[in-house]
View 1 (cartoon, rainbow, N blue to C red):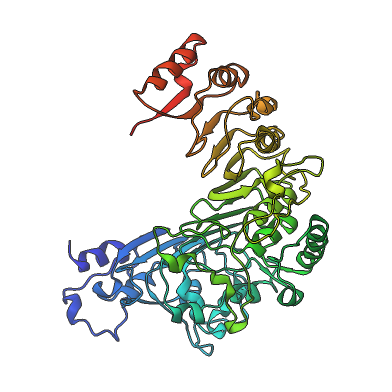
View 2 (view 1 turned 135 degrees about the vertical axis):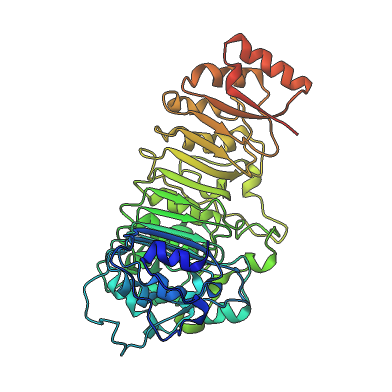
Length: 493
C-alpha cells in the first residue's frame, strides 16, 4: 500500500500526482468522505513519512494520539513536535503521548495559538523529561491543562551533567500551583527529578535529613520538621496514585510531605527505586544513578536527599488512607520503628567503632493500619534476638486488611519464636506471603503448620526452600497432612 493509498483511505484525498512531486506549499485538502478517526497511534521516524504534518493535522476528530518517535536516543532526534499546536488542532483530545522527539513550541504571537482560550479537554499527558528543558515561556500551555487527571514523565537511565544542570524539577510546580489542577495519578520512568511539593525556605537552613544525637533531640527535630512540611506548597492536592518506574529518584522530602499532606493518597509504588540512601550500593544502572540528584542548586532547585529508612517509617506513620505501598528494594531499620514502650536488645545500645551510639527513636504506629492491603518492603535487624524481630511482626499484625505481604531484602527470622504468631490478626485477610528473605527459609515445622492452619485465607506462600531438596520433601509432607500443599512455593534454581 502506497502513501497515496493511505491518503485516499484516511482523508478521501485523490490525485494522480506522486506525493513526492507535490509542492509542499500546497495543502492536502481532505475530501468530504474522510474517516472520522478518534484514536491514532504511530511508532517510527516521523521524518520518513512524507507530508506527515499535513496528514496528522487533518484528523481533527481525534480524542487519543500516541506518537512514539524512533530512534529513542538523547543524541539523535530528528522529529520535532509542537505540543501547543497539537492541543489547538485537536480540541477533543483527552489522551496524548509524545515521546522520542525534539519538542518545540509555537510563537506566542502565532495566529494558531489562543492565549486566552478555554481549558483544553486533555485528561492524560505522557512526555519525555526533555520537554522541561524548554524555556518556561514555551510551557505556558500547561496553564490550560486544568482538566488533566494523570501525567506520565519518562526519563532515561543515564543523563549527562549538562542535562542535570539544565533540568528544572520545580518548573511544573511553578506553572501548575496557580491552577486548581485535578491531577490524581503521576507515573514516572527513568531519571525524573520531579518535585511534588515546593519546600519553605526554612528547609535550606535546617534540612529534613537532619538526625538527633539522642531520642529526645530526635523528637524535637521531628516536631520541627513536621511544621516545615506543613508550610510546603502542595502542587497536586488531588493526588491518589504515584508510580515510579526504574530508576526512581524520588526525594525523602517529597515522600514525607505525601504522608502528611496528601489526604487522598492510596497507592504509592517505588518498586523500581534505587537502593536505600543509607546503604552503600552499586547496581545495574551504574553509580551515576545512585548519586543524590536532589542536591541540585541550579535554576532555583531545592536541595533534597534520597529516601532513607526514617523517611519510609515517617511516611507510613502519617499516611492515613494508604492501601498499596511497594518499595521493593527499600528497607526500614528496626531502630526507626521501635515503639516507646519497647526496648531493643543490648547490642543496639553499645557504642560503635567510632564511639557513636545508635539513636532509637520513639516510633508511632503506622497511620495506614486500618487501610493497607498490599505491602512490599524490607526490614533490617542487626540481631537475632526474638524481641527485636517481634517489633516488625507486631507492626505487620496490626494491619488488619493486609492481603499481600512481600518482604524483600529483609533479614527477619520467620519462626513463631521470633513473632510470626503476631500475624494472627490477619487470619481473615492475608492471601499471600512472598519472599520471606534472602537469608532465612521458612522450614520450622511448628511455624509452617501454624501459618497453613491459622491463616485461613492464605493461597500462596513462598518458602525460600529449593525444589527437590531434602527440606523440600519434609515441608511438602507437613503441608500435605493438612491438605495445603498447593499453597507452598519453592525455589526452582
